[in-house]
Image 1 (cartoon, rainbow, N blue to C red):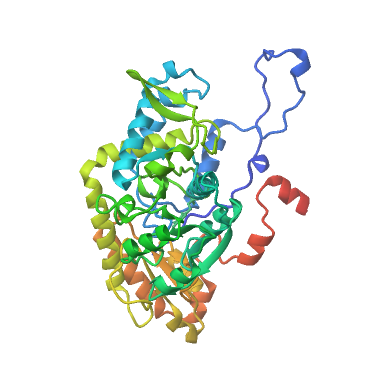
Image 2 (image 1 turned 90 degrees about the horizontal axis):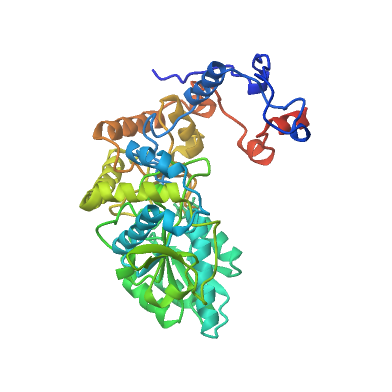
Length: 476
Ligand SMILES: *Cc1c(COP(=O)(O)O)cnc(C)c1O
């Protein structure tokens, strides 16, 4: 039986403080010295124990399966951390002259070439700092492109299965968002045809989409979008199902962003760290952000001279440690990247096949790609919601799937086991979900019980977050 460690862990400044010893005169001028620095005074042992306690009251991908659909929490090889943590890496400074950082420039240059090969795009920018940031960059590129061609296009079209960041990014770039409905879990071609006009700047699409379904009409979609004079945008946050197999560039996409932190192994969650490289066709290359890593004789340099560039979208050159991990992962995988895609798809379909279809129904028939969405609606008549199932999974020491997304599926559970789970772990997950579905509703509604934090008031937590000591003091 699973039970998570639980400590009544005080805050750092509530722990017994050690005596402050300055150890002689601090080497600071008198004018800069303070009598007292208002931070906790703790010895190393207390500090280490504090953080170990907190980590034991947490759950991560190193604890167990973490099948968060769309977010892709896969196991991340330690190799990447070792490389990114090396002294020679951490001591790099973005203001260094290019001649002194040839090594990392070469890595970034080669990484761009790898991403071009994987996606079938012509050129990449490594600057954006997350998927959503990549989308925003892509939308700015679309705007710059249309403006240079003397066109004022004000709309971006999205399917109703789109990730929430898509409409947000389009809106932030100044576009009006037009949502079209899906048909049988795919883009409704008639709805798209109707929505396209000379006002359309771009159509944003995820393929496979967030239901885990491949948009098999993609070539026809690309044709329609092109004929309307608009651009086709690929949300490649999650490339796990198709990498090494199919390329967005070959499907007719003009702009692509990738999430290395979901696809190419970087531990993420809680808001970071990430990157959002953006790839474009030959036609759109002039608009990519600056500076760009470029060849310079035998070496590499930063190039700024691109008059049509949308400019900087990030401080310096992007999230270099994440990009370094991406490079290491790709080198290590090589052609094995195809195997990752195959295993990711197999794992998702295997897990799906093991779920009890009395409780977990599949909204549209057919095989899925790297993830699937089931509806837990049949349990509603017993008063059980997807949320209750998710909370109860915690009592089994398993991380829940993504819930209530995409919005077009009621009581949605969106499961992405990833390629890194074993068959035993998939079996255990399916058994837990099937077992939970038959448990007493009251038990589920009270779950979780075996975690240090039990059922919380989600609405209150979202509306009145108390995240810092200052918040708590103000509250009191
Ligand atoms: C995660 C995700 C994004 C956003 O990426 P962030 O790095 O979290 O900003 C966009 N689209 C899809 C489909 C995603 O899964």
